[in-house]
Image (cartoon, rainbow, N blue to C red; front, side):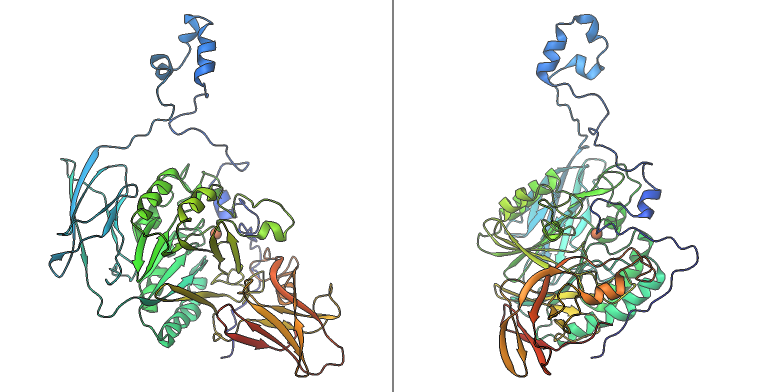
Length: 551
Ligand SMILES: [Fe+2]
């Protein structure tokens, strides 16, 4: 299939370039900055006030200074020095009684949660949770074997707001429909960073990505499929969520949503409430569901602090995850979708020892501990590049962006074409392939001629964007197998041509090539007439390519 090229547009006169927040950790976009504190980042303050921190020992020492000083202390401290420093108003207690049913009969063993506690339905499908008004949504872990319930737009509807009567009581009902066929074998599409900023970009999403996903779904052997939009669905303009939902309904499979740093209500002074608009469309920002043998978990790892964000998982979310996983048998595959990579390796490629706060999750060790008993895959987006990272027993898949170079070019900064990943599950076996928008599945590498990388004048370069250490990459000259190519960190030659410099790419001149870890080099004879690179993925699928000039 010939490639569909993304339309280009020269920058309009007076158009301001945008900041590449993903390439500069913790940096905020101009749209965010307009609505934020002048001068940049604001330090954390304790929720509930800006009183100075006084620990017990300091207080006792201060106490010797006399009762007169006590009069100067805040009332709450003078009244009870040992009271909790942070006060959280959890609201009134709410007793939720509900039922999960299918075909008029209760469904037992379904996990239901208020985002903190997790209970399972009894034999007759009933459950009870003593929650509080401070919790946002009641959610059900959609069990395997049942259809994913839908909103009218085609997004998954597994939740309902916690809205009790004046008495503090609330009734809840979740209806399920049994699948005709087993979902032991199923598939899903992982769309990271759709990131449409305006109507024009949304139209490109509708014209290019939507039919591509639809066609890919049609070609799959197993029709049991769903999608996950892995964050940065928007590019700050949340009024475009309905247009995304139209795209979902046209793709024809249920979609789950992950919240990204560009999907937030940025006028909120802290993380609380920053997902309100997202939640009005898609429900809770963290939840779980089951398909076949796989337990899926969606996390919100974007912590908004009022003038920017960092990768962090809040205490309630971690406690919920601990409770959620209590019901998941050790050894099962668990697939976690989250926006900001938990670890990534950009820092290593850029020569830094530690990952930045904006492109990694600061308290990831807590997540790793919870995932220890499982065969865990962590799927993320955010950095607009492809890579696989293995850490603490988990396999992290960082996915390139649907929007390529933020809708101003066909590839991401690491050379990966704009596109999405397709995961296929057979029993407990998880396989995946990258799907470049406008190309078929054979498009898994791009080979550049000898000297395309000026730092390697005698070598060919192959960009194998979904590479992980279980792949093998060899090259042939005139039909003769020469050996394995050498992996080195470098920049993709086509990305250099399309992105390098102050004027490129059009509309997003701040996009630059990033150092990538999936480039392979081989010294070739200048006389060789036929050069071919052959890459075999971890599942034994073989892809090949020959040198082509960039551009
Ligand atoms: Fe992002």
